[in-house]
Length: 97
Image (cartoon, rainbow, N blue to C red; front, top):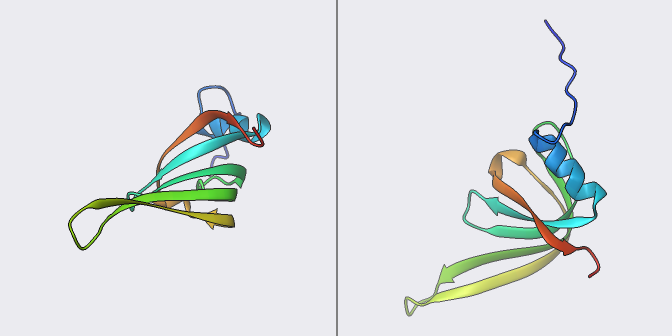
């Protein structure tokens, strides 16, 4: 078994998450269930499980008339399992602005 020393350079996904945390930025996270989350990332692990705060979950639903309606809810804190994540993008909005 060979252990690898992984350094967080600017080319790794782990570095992107580290920069989001250290720069106090918000992130938009696209999920497999077609929902989006805008939140502050507090911590993560090698499986991309995320600890999130001040979460805004956004999705669309079809109502009885066939119209698409926008839905949103706020969640204080959560742990998001990494295998449900499709894409993570840093927002240019900082927490508290």
